[in-house]
Length: 261
Image (cartoon, one colour):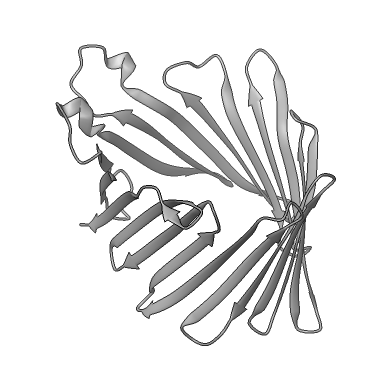
């Protein structure tokens, strides 16, 4: 059994509070490096009509090489332009400022339209992914259409969602493959969602409400895996059991605890 124990200490909503995450892999560690502690910090400010957020994630291990501590440094700016909410986020890996990953979002609430773009900037500007989401209502049903295009791989698909009276359908279609998920709220406490794909694969998800926003979710993929997620107050436990035929070939467990102070 692989045991991954994650203890997350989350700061309050006050700006400037750091967040400390400690991971224990396989339930043991040889030294503090085995804990893989990391520290993240963020803050925000405003300048005119522009809201700015920024932060850093760094290793919290003893070292004489301070430059090796940062894992990523990021910044985000948001504003409104002619009815559009626009934001741009840039992230640098470590202290390498020669290139940055970019995410640009634009949304128009009047048109129920969102646009999302992913790119990289360095010696040049290169777009990697772009997608749009259009939402509309028809006869009491909520419908969304989400075309997506991966510039790097030249792969395109579209996700169409339909939701009405406790039943939702999600169709993902590309030139090579299609999948359909049908989700049905059986009662106040139980939801079931089978997924079928054009390749013949099938999976079934069952979610059981335990009250107070707590739940147990089981996802079965025949001849592949059984996954369980149990949310209980501040605890979240995930159990993954690979399946070969009718045999369970292993068990991977992760447990996360959030403590607010």
